Length: 114
Image (cartoon, rainbow, N blue to C red; front, side, top):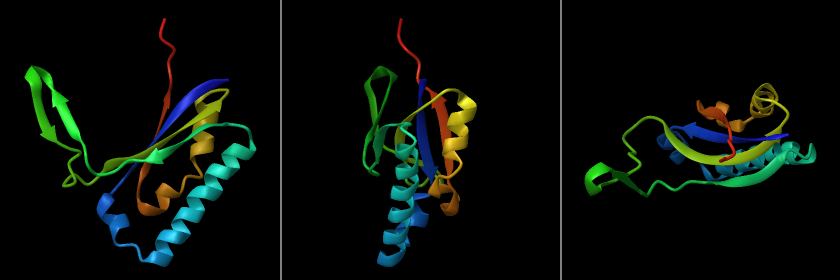
C-alpha cells in the first residue's frame, strides 16, 4: 500500500453562496464519501478544510498575503488515503463531492524521503 494526497480545488465564491440547508447537505455528502473510503480501510487522514487566510513566502524575504481569493480556483482542503496504485487512488477520488461544485481533485503519491 502507498499513501496518496487528495488535494481539493474549487471556487471559494461558489460555496459562499450556499444556504444553510445546502451547506448541511454538502457536508453530509462529504462525510458519506469520506466514510465510504474509511469503510474500505483506505483512509489514513481525513484532513481538513483550509481557510482563506494565509501568507506566501518568496525568495529574498518577500512575504505577501495569500492565498489569492481573486483567483477562480483555490485549494480548499486535503485528505490522505492509501491505495495499491495511483489508478486505485484515482478511482477512490472519483466519488468526491467537489465535482458537484465544479471543483477538481488532484491525486498525488506521497514519496518517502531517503
